[in-house]
Image (cartoon, rainbow, N blue to C red):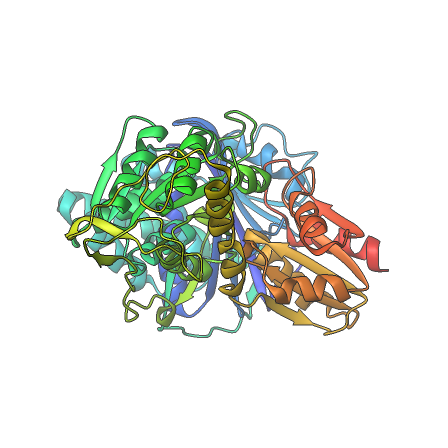
Length: 573
């Protein structure tokens, strides 16, 4: 008789299989139904760089509270090919339930956990073959969670109606067979679900890619030029989809150099353009970033980080490009760098990026990573707000117009070609107020000081950093970008009065609140997903304070709740 397993706060469900097998189909079905049933849901993917084959996995967390972090523990696993069980086995423990077909497990003697072998392949063969395996597994899972049958059947009717009545009938038959298998699991494994459901009709399921795309539209984006590169392509795909309904020009160009120069041209003509790319593509944009800096021509670039150098691990996650973003381009020129930590912040900072680029005539970089872009979680509908109309900062020129005029605030009025009587002359060489090439030292100094003064203005635009915990902590934990969810959850688990946690989403220039907390902290612990401590180095440089501790990871995986807990306890205990 198996022991009773009671799940009260949350449960971790992991599906394993090969690329092309359709794991994401199961994921989308389950998340929509679980959310509708009142569970808080979060999902993240581990994908290999393969079109077919390999060993992929999807983690789905269900709970009574909102979660936005990866956990290593697996409560229930569904290995659906021969590689998955062994690949996931280092995440199993004695409490893990492993539901699979014997055909998918070569040897289970050395694997922890309790196996429940089901005739998955035999069952789908009676319906029409392996193409129905996803529907069967979804049916099993939904029965384990005691989801009413009609919720799933309604989904199947809607999804397969265009493929004919026979396909609808076979999927419904498969779903019912799955529910029958799920009944046996509930009985044999002693599963008891006591997770409190909290119906949340005012939320959306969003990943970082779609949230960033929506935020860009809210910021007035009406042009995107990009070359596809994982994991940035999700933003391009989302905007291409939205372009069917709204006035938005989408250009998939031949390379990244074309992408950014086309975006610069669009801004010059009065559009608000976005470029989305990853590290290798961003490297090709270095010269054009300098062009933006010299010509004071705005541009917004989304930099979706992945492990490098070179093509590295194309489908994994890392925060390894901060130093590059800080210094990309030859010469010195101002820039703003945002690193949102949640889908909500992806929306907020994408919208803000377009206003900042336009207002201060600088390049703005939005930094994300694979984990943030491709993880799904709940976002309040009120966050996705299009009521705030973008403010345009260009002017109608007159005959006396000077593109690079010296002003009190260091921001020259930006005119557009053909909008007014003035001549809009820009130049990539150093220039005078008219935009004509110069080489005299006095004008050069004045132009450099005019451009660089914007860093001070940008620092005043910073949204306050998020903070929780003791206001005068013994240890100040500092995170940036996608580490927000895991650090928030660990803070709640540890509930240690000696800890404070600050999350920084505008990483350059830093706001005064960040500098103040860094300078007054007793001891600082920086958590970041790279090898060399790039954000810790930035804090040292900008705040004149070297952090005492770092927690780092650079294996291509996101931080897990368990790893952060373990590493923090080594420091604070």
